[in-house]
Amino acid sequence: MAMSQEQSKALDLVLEASGDLVDIAKLELGLASGAIVLYVHAMSEWKDNVALIVSLTIAAIFFGVSCLYCIRGLAKWTSIKTSIAKALIAEPTPSVKPGDQWLTANVSNLGGAKSEFDRMEAFFNLGVIASMAIFAIQIVRAIVLYCIHKATS
Image (cartoon, helix red, strand yellow):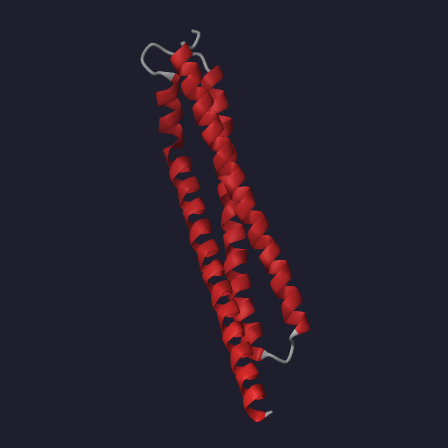
């Protein structure tokens, strides 16, 4: 059974949206892993600043957990895409349409992938918030040190 033009367009939109979702997840994965590398480097440079090391560690942990959830979400999404392909090439039966068969088989995968990506997003946002707090604290610290220096000179 051939797809109608509307069905073909709908499938193209679904596949495009799926690609966009994966691209966004990969972007967040790259940003989070880059932040971890930067923070580990910064921690090795500022060994004497315990407060900064603790703050950077917390942010790095948030980004690391975000990376783990991202990888898990991408793995589940790959499984979903594979099952879509199987449903598209399966022989339709009169009582069950391929889309319905696929949806029944993948309800838990869809919920699982969404859950993983939601957690990824939450931990990524916590990492960003922790990073902003670190930089705000460093800016305030620099201003205070500058003012103290000006007052004593």
